[in-house]
Image (cartoon, rainbow, N blue to C red; front, side, top):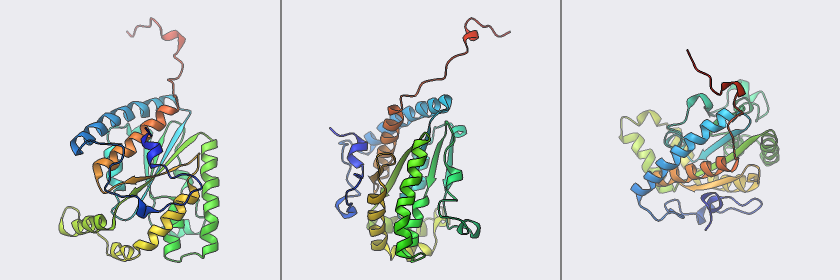
Length: 271
């Protein structure tokens, strides 16, 4: 039976068709919502242990990239999956519209400073992929430019991996109907209204263009060193379960060990 990582992996070198992936299905899990939440809680507890071990070991790094359509659940995933980890060893970077200073540099310049240091987990809410998604859909650069960026992204992520960073990338895949409901909730619920932007409607009108951009970008940049996973995300509880399972599987595979003990500590008494 395939693991979660194997089940949702974007196979390197193969075309991807998002329409073939049902965002409401829960493949690999036969339980209901309550069972899914319970399993996620157990996996998150294990993730906390592994994050502590990663931090103590201090030799490896983990980069988690989250991409999605608007209202796709990136913030919710971060809250639900990383709720109990030690904030000292985890940092989150959110990549919004580039500043003038960022635009004056190459497109990867603003991302690299947010890569994880030894022992850290870095979570990117949006990422360098905006420059082959938004830039493509809105014609901010010509096709020759954004197509060339696939190669630059693969090379950048390969370099991170070679230097000790494990890279895992998640596309949180929601349906257009689910997005409509979530955007409407932002309008109807005063507590969520701060999330609302009229720009969301303009982006929604470009749904098909974004789906095509995602399909090509994910297929072109999913590699053995930095794989993509397409996570069915209409059901928040299943989205959280998939991400948590894959991260636990990833960290366990690193076979991390605590650093050597101080040989003089044995028998020591604190007075």
